[in-house]
Amino acid sequence: EIVLMQSPGTLSLSPGERATLSCRASQSVSSSYLAWYQQRPGQAPRLLIYATSSRAAGIPDRFSGSGSGTDFTLTISRLEPEDFAVYYCQQFGSSLTFGGGTKVEIK
Amino acid sequence: QVQLVESGGGLVQPGRSLRLSCAASGFTFSTYAMHWVRQFPGKGLQWVALISYDGANDYYADSVRGRFTISRDNSKNTLYLQMNSLRPDDTAVYYCARGHGGNYFACDLWGQGTLVTVSP
Image (cartoon, rainbow over all chains, first blue to last red):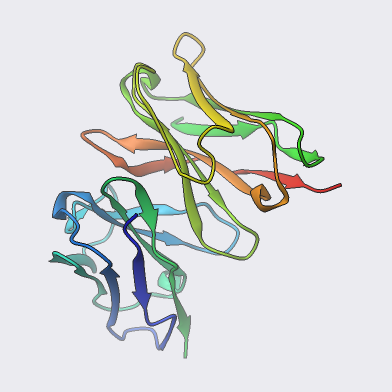
């Protein structure tokens, strides 16, 4: 089973700042099978990015994804108040797994 | 409106069974793969199971294989999760989610979740 390690565990930033979230896989992941989700408190997760860099419908262009092989990144160019949340990466290889999450909190 | 609504959660004793349902509306349910994903209290997400659009193929996480069964009734626009031999570590919020078209592993529509508590 491919394990996804997300870092940092918590990211403390101010609105307007840039956020860079990392997702590292224990084995190579196909770029077609890497996704990112946002989860706000008390809500279900929301798909942000699929296939490493494709934004889901309705997702603002301040969210972008990149990477390949074992290293993937979610970047939020300028944090808006509604972006403070937990973010998960997900992969689909022999099975489907999620990372442990990165919490983006207000500094 | 496009939505998924789970039901069937609750308190159940270890070793017992429970069946979750997920009612889909606002989209052509029969053309989408569907998932169950769970979230342990205060923790992260764990994928549970996936079923193809026509129900012909299903896949499971190792932790539930042999105990849980995913199924669907496309005539009723409903997804199911039959959970047998429940254990305390199955306690979680269970979400149903829609596979994202060709990238069916990604979940682009989620329900609000239903809480399953396994306790004596």
